[in-house]
Length: 101
Image (tube, rainbow, N blue to C red):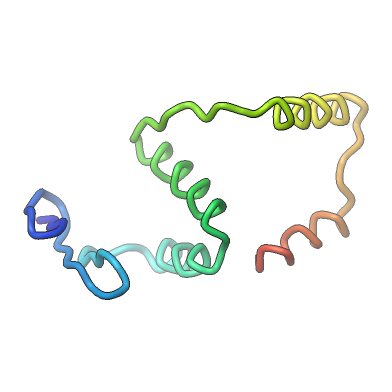
């Protein structure tokens, strides 16, 4: 049974706390760790991760509209991939370090 702000639903037992909604249902240790790590990320990254997780769990998400700058960035990224221009291992590690991964 799931409780969201006093409204029972099905599946989990939850309650509101000072940190937000808490669930009593078990998660795997890996999922718990992923959520703990995500808490330390910037809000916009947390939202991106949440959308991906919800989509993987079968909950359709609204289409994200790209700005012209974002579209241009994707076009350039695809062109780089076509030219086989990929990030070096060092560049990838730098991005991971930036987000604490």
